[in-house]
Image 1 (tube, one colour):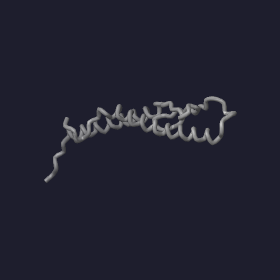
Image 2 (cartoon, one colour; image 1 turned 45 degrees about the vertical axis):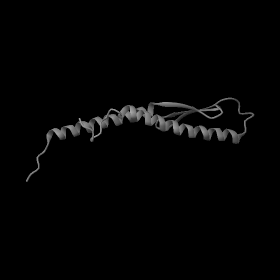
Image 3 (cartoon, rainbow, N blue to C red; image 1 turned 60 degrees about the vertical axis):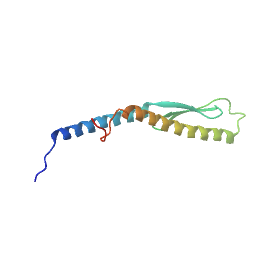
Length: 109
């Protein structure tokens, strides 16, 4: 017995795939463009990081003449860790904003 093809279901599936593909492209663009600024605990190092996790700028504030290299390394390491957390937070926020209205297949229409 041949199976019937539900054309409306196929059309809806293709439309959902196209919409999801467009949302993924929007998300990819958004995570590359969204920049978060974070600072080390002592505020001596500032890092700009995209939601994709790319560090785009690092600024050292104040003089390095009286700064111990170990202390500076500790601050840089701390701010890089903070930047990774900030990027993850920004990605999750953007994901919710972009995909939040996209209904799952289990949800009734």
